[in-house]
Figure 1 (tube, protein in one colour):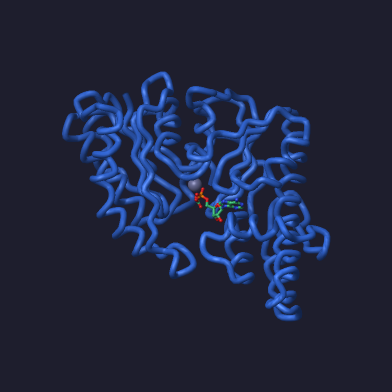
Figure 2 (cartoon, helix red, strand yellow):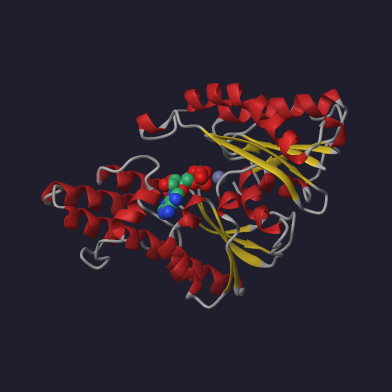
Amino acid sequence: MILAVETSCDDTCAALVSADGAILANVISSQEAHARFGGVVPEVAARSHLELIDPVIDEAFARAGASLQDVELVAATRGPGLVGALLVGFAAAKALAAARRLPFAPVDHLAGHVAAAYLKPTPFEPPFVALIASGGHTLLLAVRERGAAPEVLARTLDDAAGEAFDKGARMLGLGYPGGAPLERLARAGDPYAFNFPSGRGEDFSFAGLKTALLYRTRDLDMGDEQVRADLAASYQRAIVDALVRRAERALERAGLSRLALGGGVAANGPLRERLAALGAELFLPALALCTDNAAMIAAAALDAPALAYPDYLSLDVYATGEGPLR
Ligand code: KG4
Ligand code: ZN
């Protein structure tokens, strides 16, 4: 079995996955400490990973009824992400691998989001277009074969889609993370009450949308529940439009008719409905596999080259710019 660790942002994650892609344990400890800051504080995340990493790995072994003796390969996220956060999981995983002279697979976080589709019990194999939308990334990828670097069809020029949800939610007086509360508020609103921009061109851009909402919140009566709901619904429609239109274009450009979703924004109901209506074969992984988790890192490790002991000891993490999708 594979032991995988993921600590690229604010979730401390460990998983045990069998060599044929069955999940034996998938433990995710979300850090609550960031809510009062309205976003992830890198130093707080790193310290919190340090406290959580051992108990989270122990819990994975307990849930799987296994021990380090059963592990044949160790994997960990190498980047992109917060360097201090990455370092904690990467060093812990290397140490466990070294203790037993096991091979070690460094995994790119985004390759992990893609590989979530390969896990049992519902493996979805390439070729497909992957839409990865979370608080940290917004990408459309053409995935032609397992393990090969996918072609980037579109990416965000500024904020990530989840970040746009979070910042919009904040302007509407909702808590962090704001995607789910904004979706709930939007249910009582009219998505056509306001016309918000959803960006032009092949790539994503959410900066103009954010500014447009800011001006509206200044001009309108934010004490009026209906106004807030209408703003939420219209703002959500703009983000969903941006994602769906570019996903449709990406499928055309890649000549594919299969679409896999990843990232926390995949939880969004209107997004799922609109994507389902595109007519492509749609793969929605379980939500626990869409948000950051270590099972997806193990899945990517199944196809990634592993290094023998001690060749991996000097490996470092990367914040950005070095992965297969740079
Ligand atoms: O994948 P994830 O858990 O962590 C990151 O890698 O960022 O994604 C979290 C993001 C947050 O920005 C959150 O607001 C967004 O996913 N999100 C949603 C919904 N649930 C979570 N966005 C829109 N609608 C939702 N229901
Ligand atoms: Zn992620």
